[in-house]
Length: 155
Image (cartoon, one colour):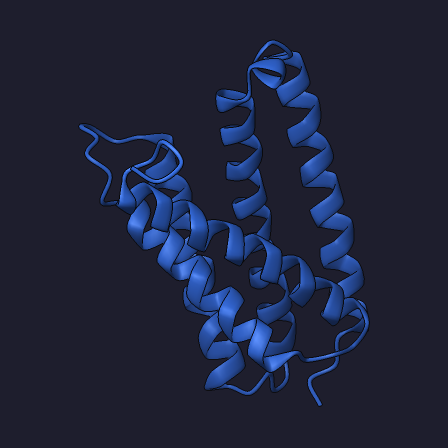
């Protein structure tokens, strides 16, 4: 056990947090019109790994987390080739920015969900506090995504 977690859970949480931290930097880099290639690679890799490892927890039946993992992998299946194969040419720049921001939004959505579930003081605020926090999260990422899409250049 590591901090009360199995090694697998610890690994999943660690890569999730690395993905979230690097995702914030990548999105704010887009807003500043900076590419940040190393951080972008870390963000994309850890976000893919987070989604993939989420399917290996011993649950039975279909869980909402599986839906989030599937959606995340779909948007990443657009973002990664848009950046590395299409080199952000033409409409691929917007496709990359939008799908990267969606992937980051999903990461933060799950983080908020986990915090409300695991932190007793936040759990006590559910469901109203959770809904308000998630709505704020959604609005924030819509705004950040629109600004990033306007400011980020493919060059």
